[in-house]
Length: 295
Length: 180
Figure 1 (spheres, each protein chain N blue to C red):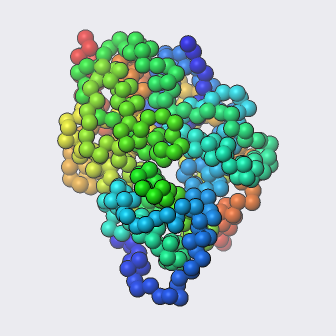
Figure 2 (cartoon, chains in turn green, yellow):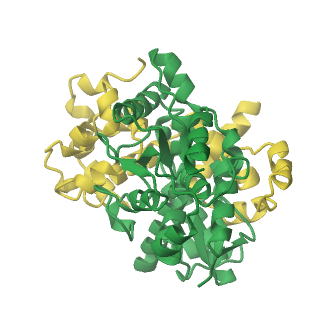
Figure 3 (tube, helix red, strand yellow):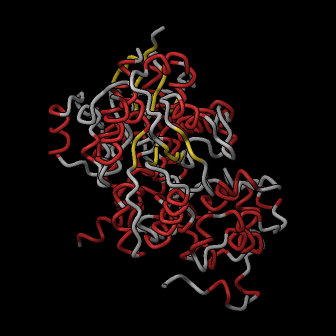
């Protein structure tokens, strides 16, 4: 079974997290998920919600309206984007007055929101559309030698009211997908807690303390890597890991992989194909283990 | 820390706006403000409150209920919420705490109180569609990375769709002032 989605990249991924996009496209292609590009793009709106809810609604609805014209559903790599597009779709479908107000704005750009496009995050597509069986069957190098930890982040499943899968208090999807690669997924304290990214620029100190708190819990269970599914969480844990180490005079050295990179390795793709060299924290130790362990 | 201490100063009757809570209750996201009975679940589960000496969502909600309009809207701590929505999901009274905080931030922004990070993102979206200024080099590099061309923003259409939004007038006006 093949499926086709409109890929919504968001802003952070093309700006500085291209390894996520590269690995996601490779893995999806191999699993038969066809991708089309957005005909025109603007930010999902989430970053401006704190200062203008109305702006957020218009920006999100504009993307939904564009997607509706293509007749395709949306796949996002960023949980902030999928969370926002899902939320706005649901709010506007329910609230007629608000929908008319927002459509008044979209009309000036020649668009209309109807509420017919479904949005899914990549891990939801992998679980619901591709299916666990197909993923397991695609694994040629089971990663049984790896013990990793997962970080789902906030916006994939919160607020609960607008999410249509899994449970924010005890999320299972990412864990199940990690285990499909053969790797062990370890539990740790405060797994569902925020990485701190949204506080960057407001209070870097608070933001880095949050990330450090998570890294210390992950280290406590001796995880060899951390698996993320969000560009912002990835920046907090990978790009900022050295900064946190310096700030608190501690050593973590935990490599941070995007889930599609982990899956790609299990599917037999090379570290080069999966852009693993783009990471700030050295991944060579676990890659050596993957390569030697599988042979 | 430059975080405000105003929350701890004695309250004067003259600074109370008794109608403020009703004003908030009419706004999208603020509807359930009056349900809060100050149990403190939001603060005890807040990841930011763990590491901030001043950010307490329960206190912000209480200030809003009491009508301490100026004080809450001018408070620096208002901007510390990470929008993780843990408080919203766990509130036993279904107050949607994070949404009330967003409503308060939106009101502060209308008064011109906008942290610089949001101004930068707003102007980048207006200029390119993207929240960050993506360097040309990165856009070009995509081809060598085996990636399709980056979808283009349509600033003209974005401006058309956002015409009449109060917040943006504020951003553009501020931009002009800076240039003078």
